[in-house]
Amino acid sequence: MTGYVALGSSMAAGPGIRPSAVGAPFRAGRSARNYPHLVADRLGVDLTDVTYSGATTANVLDEPQHGTPPQIEALDGTETLVTVTIGGNDVGYVPMLMAAGLPRILRRLPPIGELFDRTTRDRALVEVGESLRRVGETVRARAPRARVLFVDYLTLLPPAGEPVSPLSGADAALGRRIADTLERLTGEAAADTGCEWVRAARASREHHAWSAQPWTTRPGLPWPARPAPLHPNAAGMRAVADLVVEHVGTRSD
Image 1 (cartoon, rainbow, N blue to C red):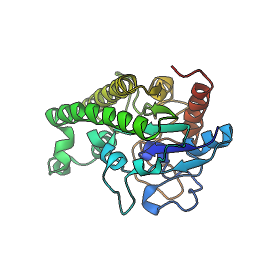
Image 2: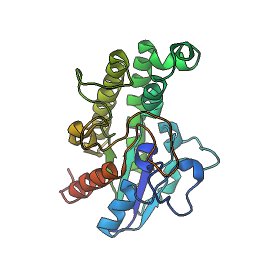
Image 3: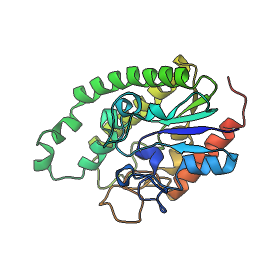
């Protein structure tokens, strides 16, 4: 197999996991040990990794990001594998959880306050469902020879009823609702567009950020040379790579 292109946001890029990918833009936060690099190493394939922290579905499809072209332009029709991890930034998932730790007076200020508005989140989730389908359709059209895998997000939050300090129960509940809906919409987009679905969220339920063996990090201040808060850690990236490699070893639907 040759020709693997990785598309997506920071959940695939791996900000803070050292070392950084050679030649990657600083703002991309792209790690040389993110799951795309690990998958490429395991499968022995050439990798084009255009994952970029902060990316939305629009940045995958048609909007440049900090001077870099839309990620879809990395596809030339010769690739045989494409992975896509996207959608959380469209709905403010991690930004909402990060803002949950701010003082209440700051949380009332726009645009931070909008992150906690359920009507706004619901509207964004409806829109991201359509956007994810567009991503699937466009990638399939641009890479007709490829297996296209939607890889959803690792689970960040523990189940309801478990401690989630410093987040409040209400904020955690909203976060779970966003995560669960995004997971479902990713699976529906994959099914509707002839793509495949790697279920990282389901596989990581017991490895949330508050667990004994976390695959993601808790909220906090970012520190140099450490995985970004509320993002995959090195163990999480290895776990996702295992899921992708296992999935690629199965027959395509």
